Amino acid sequence: MEILALFFFSSSISLFVAYLFLFFKVKISLHTLALGLFTAFLGIMSYYFKIKLLFLIASLFLLSGYIAHVRLKLGAHTNLEVYLGFLLGIIIEMVCFTLLF
Image (cartoon, one colour):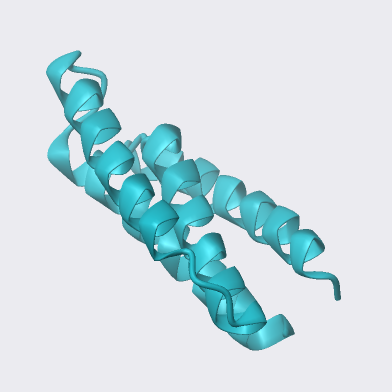
């Protein structure tokens, strides 16, 4: 399986999981979910291809924190929804990578 196809597959899985959380009245932040997915994907790319993407990954962590802060400040999400989105993005990307690659 190509590495980019893995990213799209894990994105689909994570959106489905976020949809399932709606049944429990938890609306996961899709902004932080996407940033968690992309951060984990770049970490996987860095590991798999042996390239140094540390600056880009660190920048994404900072951007994730800023976007999470904005989502909380706007009152669009709670702390749990923002943190859960980011963690689910990272976890789902890592699980898909270990199972499929």
